Length: 96
Image (cartoon, helix red, strand yellow):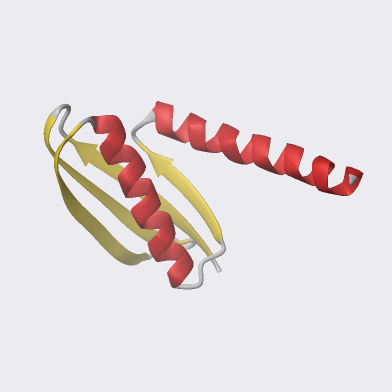
């Protein structure tokens, strides 16, 4: 199953909240998630909500998840982590 995870955060630094919407690929709303995080930075909140949303989506059987958010930093870091992981882990495992 495919889905889209959209995340938003508020607060930097100070009282921080994070929320995410999980949508089916056709755009229909599957679930809304939110969490109060206490005092934190926006980066901490952004990572927390991405983890929260991905965990929820995986537990519900979604395996193809597109992540969208208002944080270019988080989106780029997650993208490059997976790009690096998949490029180098496959070449490393096939070489051994």
